[in-house]
Amino acid sequence: MKVIDHISKAKKILFSFEILPPLKGKNIKYIFDTLNPLMEFNPPFIDVTYHREEFIYVEKGNGLLQRKKISRRPGTVGICAAIMNKYKVDAVPHLICGGFNKYMTENALIDLNFLGIDNLLVLRGDPLKYEDKFFAKKNGHKYALDLVKQVNNINLGKYLDKNFINYDEKNNPIFDFCIGVAGYPEKHLESPNIESDLFFLKKKVEAGADYIVTQMFFDNKKYFTFVNRCRLEGISVPIIPGIKPISSKQQLTTLPSKFYLSIPNELVKEVEKTNNKKNIFHIGIEWAIHQSQELKKSGVKIIHYYTMDKPENIYKIVQSIF
Ligand code: FAD
Image: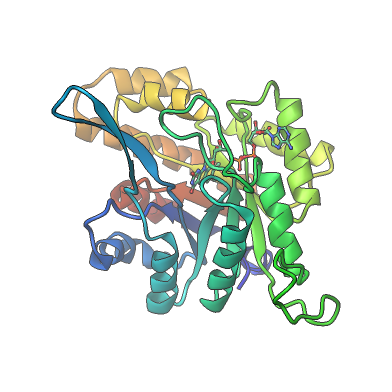
């Protein structure tokens, strides 16, 4: 079932979450061990992130460095198939522009359709570690907007590869992907201002996005203001709030620098009072519970959690909210 149908048919507030494919070397048992505790809360869908290849530099004996391409977290599509097979729950693979040309994307969409996957979160992807900005692959997409257009086209039966395909554009629309996109309550880090970011967010919706999932935020006011601004701009699709509990002191600096977001002083002060990891974990959980309670009270239909490989804290939050 499509994400937007889950939302529109929900009789009570829904809980969804995102997992990362494990680092290479772990097997499917690791995924199921992560998921099993959370399944008792009946998530209607589970997102699986996509991680493109990275480059590392390896020291050669002669003092030279060799650039090597590595893939740390492969397996997004396989994990989605395994989730759907084992739990009979919809899986939402993240589909990115980075590392793909349009033809690779077309083939990936065909594979996803064969697997019975009809939900996607469509993203641009981040720049590679050693690059100061995002570079699209040759014949690839520069922005998520262009990828949304490609998915929407294939939903209409419009393939890139017209020569070999025997299809009827009008009468045989074979794909029906439900398209989610990212939204940033505190603006995307590269965007010159929130107005510009909202302008392009609206373009993604006009191009076929069915719903928006927000970047994490720690102050609900940011989310409520963002939703109001979207509505004023005429963006009427569901906007799913994304929540992540703080789980270490280091995140007070890493999250703002990586995701361009602010952390309320009250939360910073609480975390800074202690060096005990367990206490910090607990503070993060309590803050996320408070945020979730307020969001629930405000009438949101669904809350999405970033597990970041740590299901224990999400379990505690969800247990007290859903
Ligand atoms: P876009 O919508 O393309 O926007 C990127 C920037 O370009 C923005 O500043 C926007 O304002 C601007 N812009 C957009 N269109 C245009 C245009 N036509 N002309 C000029 N400027 C434009 N990354 C991964 O690699 N894998 C994942 O699995 C993943 N999952 C994510 C899940 C969520 C919920 C979120 C919020 C982010 C996720 N990301 C993931 C990170 C995401 O890829 C980065 O935030 C990336 O930098 C931007 O992606 P986007 O889809 O928002 O890009």
